[in-house]
Image 1 (tube, helix red, strand yellow):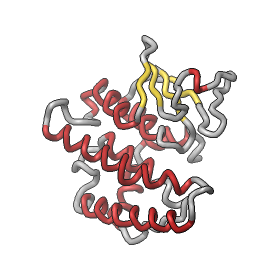
Image 2 (cartoon, rainbow, N blue to C red; image 1 turned 60 degrees about the vertical axis):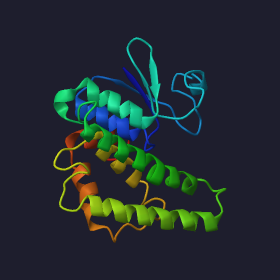
Image 3 (spheres, helix red, strand yellow; image 1 turned 90 degrees about the horizontal axis):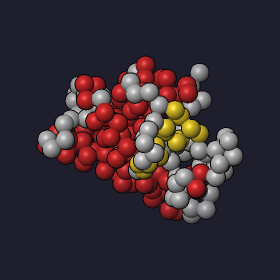
Length: 202
């Protein structure tokens, strides 16, 4: 199994999931700026969309889109409890969280990385993200993780995108539950391994 990733990008989420699941995999760097692998391969020849993450299975099947990839990973190691069983209401709630993170957080962070985005629009995006983090903070009240006491793939995804707040100047200091959550997830051994592997932690 291969995970195509770019350091610090949203591919950190499945990277964390793979390590939490204890699944053997090869991490292949596919930088989002150059789209060129270390061996010189043009990443577009593997993934025409050009972005990460992409998971390549041992039989050559390729899976894209982070929320789908992390659920696949979770289902390969059910005893790790990274996602509830398929078909349960709890699984649909997890999918709801993954969709929220993807559309209400991840999508709104994207334009903040582009120097071409007008400042007025960036201000509006920061305000929207702040309102969404208020909701996240409320969901984390009295809980260690989004779904309760157990770490799930939704937590890895939330951790990944929220890590972008500081370098982008998004002030989340008003959200104590979010801050505690970030520290809690960062301390997990599998998360530390992923961060170190991507050169994001010492």
